Length: 422
Image 1 (tube, rainbow, N blue to C red):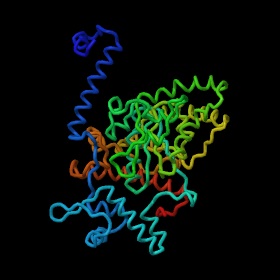
Image 2 (image 1 turned 90 degrees about the vertical axis):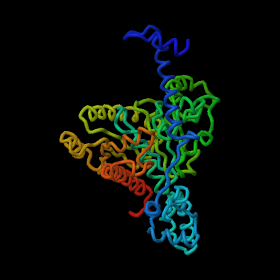
Image 3 (image 1 turned 90 degrees about the horizontal axis):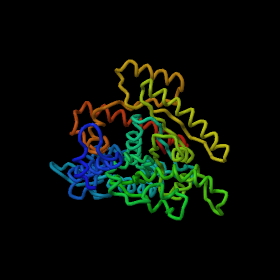
Image 4 (image 1 turned 30 degrees about the vertical axis):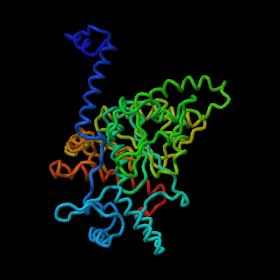
């Protein structure tokens, strides 16, 4: 039965056809429209690209003055920027990272290792700087989990770290923000499930990872096949005693997959599904740090309370079974915060009195700039200031940067770095 035949039978409030066929028709219609929208937004290649940065923005990201950047350009050192109207210079993120490498090499040649590390901020395993795996989680939808995850991953990439973003949510919202339409762009076995499944179809995580338009930021996309892990795990557990080589238990499988690519990254950001299943538990066991997002409404806080109870009980079982649960930090991130909303401010104060410094000092404010950018599947780090009212854009960007710089400082602290990140 084709979609047109289905449409003619969807008359009135009552479905004249089986519900699965009606829902499938809606899904196909929506998929077609989303594809058409993507083709319009990102024509002709239907691929997202990252905007260029002004010389002032590039200088701030690298940690030098705009004048020094101009001197390098005039001297022909490092990658040359694109020059536009009135001699205005612009740099891609790839240019910025190449300049970081160039300046680091110059500092090393002068035996100034501290300066070199200020430009090239990659972790140094020789100094005990381990891969930082940050799980962003909550099982209540609307808590800003995916928005927080994508902006954190992009912020860390902009700061010069090598980042892997992993979409663990079958709904694949994180993947959509990176320009993927899962039902069209993924053919099967293309998600993290391919690297943690229990059968012969398992493949190396390195073969699943995809480059993004953000230099230094890679992605493991998600789609509905991630849900298979929830169905396959109970079966694998019941059959485990019959297997000769069953591999790691479910709670260690994501950790094992990430270890196989750990040399290539400094930070992994896991966008967990909004449910407490085997996938989320495995992500928490792989995590070195956890961010719990919470919207400051009483129902959301009550939901988080149940989430914490359930998580504690299940992780205790995992720990007794041999799982390692040693977090560098656990923080609660207040999202979609409206500072002028009295009840919200009271709830934030209530949380701070209970959890102290485990609540991040900075909050993610509710902003039309973030939601408007999302209409075109973009983040605030991707769109230019000229697309918004300056005050609105600046306020939202200041909030994002404050949150993410606080998390970055916690990462540096876990690595034993000084306050300047070295």
